[in-house]
Length: 450
Image: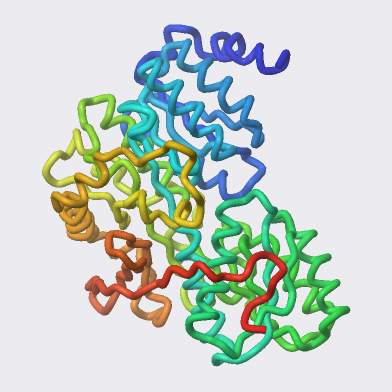
């Protein structure tokens, strides 16, 4: 705590109390050493500066204590707009309660506590957004099935036991195999801590055990599969298909050279910049509707067919092509442009929570049910679908069949995914596929279809 206690003093020394005005915007995230957060920071900074405000990055090294202390310190120094990523789902509850006490506008990304909505905290916690991990894994399973022509033996690189996103991706992958590919099995599973070296060592152990039986490896994060691909190459195996998620800028070369076959990209830079705009709008009078307080965000699959487009569009050193100010509901109340696809999340069917019991005595705020029954959810869903016209963020038609983005949709009783394809002449075509919920998915270490 002694190290943390100097934070506010350092902030004041660097910026001055008056500099930390209500127009200062703070972005929270884990660490700059992580390639994902380098681009996350870039998007956030560009958006804040486009809005004419001062940007401060607050990394927390995955420490909930540091994360919360920084929020308290910046609030005490006069900051009224904070957004970004939290190191744990539990810290979301503490942060959202705090910002409502101190009347600080807050919006977060990727992590949300179990059975805890923005309405549970109060109006200053305006919005949660993030890609759906279960749907990510399910569609990844469909890709593995396509690569293997419906038959083969695979392994799964899990992250670590407490990772909700990693675990849900693995569950989604198994569900896809159970639903669609009964002749694809899971013969090996291990936690590899989202680290390349651990992915390498785990795969070496699998090779020693299974030899050339391994046809594909599904990973819940890209770095592990990079290590797995190296281990397979060193062992002289015929190509082992690598399907994974969380595309990082540094790993795009591994897609270019064919080491990785399919990698889900979650547009973290866009999410960060978008949430900067969200808290800016909240401070300037915009209030999200009930469906807009929780929203799923789009993903895409990056493959050898479209990786060059992705690098050219999102992997350059210069600024992103986003018009951040056009995203604003207050600066552009009639012609705002999200430049990405979002779908409202209905809490009662949220894939993060549906497999979990509610805490004793907890009920989802009734405003969500009221919004569903009144048709407001459908109205907001159609609004955002109509607003999504930014064809340039979707892989091009020439990269077919990987010329689409996808986003989870739980507005019906059954889970679905909205697919938007970019066709010739930048025409966007929308379709919907079913993504079945399953409650009989084997757990970690229990295989699949065996």
